[in-house]
Image 1 (tube, one colour):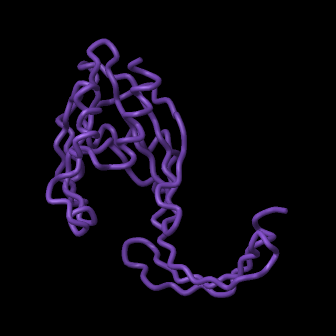
Image 2 (cartoon, helix red, strand yellow; image 1 turned 120 degrees about the vertical axis):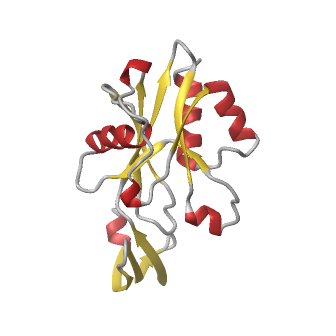
Length: 193
């Protein structure tokens, strides 16, 4: 049985369409015991995104960014978030989007990005699927200071960190962003062994 055989959408209402779409959805779901149950959920559709961890295997370093994130602040995080470069796909392929975002945010013009996996970031409420990439970098690939797009409110600081320092920053809470933790742990297991 396909999951589509177990779901019947009864109603969808748009609650907000300011920047992304927030919907209220009422649906029937056939439970494992065969009984149908009506459920109500709010679903936030912000589109899909891509993220990237640039790494230098010889120097054992990675490039991350630090920036303000309002939702983290509103959740009690009193600091800037350290993250992997990322961006919404906005009708681009994941590969193309992440090359553009990496250059805009970090200042590095990377060449060979490699997709390592995809993941739903918060599937209980958000439709977003993240495409995860890694790419080797070297100093000669840096063509600007990066920093993001000021017109979009970005004020990004670029960080080049030893991989061991970045991993320690997960343990002590200085890195608290899920996509970044996932990429750093991937790098620890598969790149910097």
